[in-house]
Image (cartoon, rainbow, N blue to C red):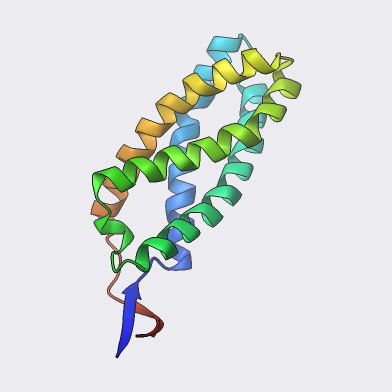
Length: 152
């Protein structure tokens, strides 16, 4: 018997990523400009660099996480709360470790200053990720077009 699992399409993953990053930047860029006393353009450029990095990491991370989860027989839009929390926290941890060098250089911060700021922003983003992904899953549930994973 062949098992099939419904997974998000490539277009759906791109829609999710673009919508997530655009809405998050609409919040963080004005807040960052105000906090650092810098121009919206300067913080916006930093945001663009971080967004491109986050989108690349996010596409890979979400694909791997969903693929592993599909192996258990569950689709991502049916993910229980504890796995949503694990998903969001793991993603943010991957972003923090790759953002620190960029923040130190761009904003001329020490590693400790950059880490403190990044953890504060990350705390917000973890909650935002949970809420955004839950809303996205309700608006765009996984389409019932299964992908064959193999036979058992």
